[in-house]
Length: 241
Ligand SMILES: [Zn+2]
Image (cartoon, rainbow, N blue to C red):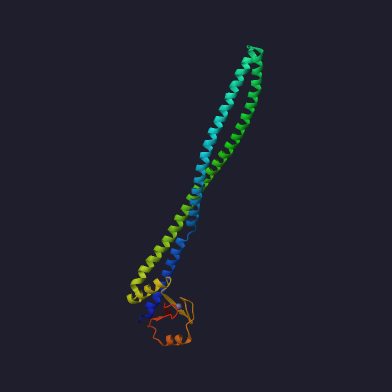
């Protein structure tokens, strides 16, 4: 295949643009914010799961606490009633003695219940603390997610603008190149990691960076400049400088 030197140089120019477009795409797909947002989502999900468990626990402990308070109140009422009866002095001495015994038992029962209540109260406070901690985490993560989303959108917009600019330059360049040469370039480009044309620098192909053997190099030197040559190693179009 033959192509003018100008066309060959334009092809290298096109390759530069295409390589920059590829780089922009890679940068877009690998923006650190994408991974960071995914990590935040996982943490938010985990927080929500734990929060639901701990909130249920808190509701249960609150019921337990109320029950315990009622138990104490009940014993307290009974004590007050017994004390009133005892203080009134009404009843047989045996009955009054029984009341005194009962008061001792009730006082002990009240102390035990209060100990239990205190334990539940401490448990309640501990669970409540964890709920608040998780709610705070949730707020912090949501705030961070918002910030990251803004950063991601800005970075995307910046790369998008670069890509639009490159796309414009490509569209302006393509019609200037021989369609047959362009077709060959595109075909190679799609099967050679986005690089279809490379410069021959010294005895090296700038596409695969391998040296061209001396015999081949001599053969190339003997060819007319409008002859399209291909790297023997990577099959890319080689443009002589
Ligand atoms: Zn090569």
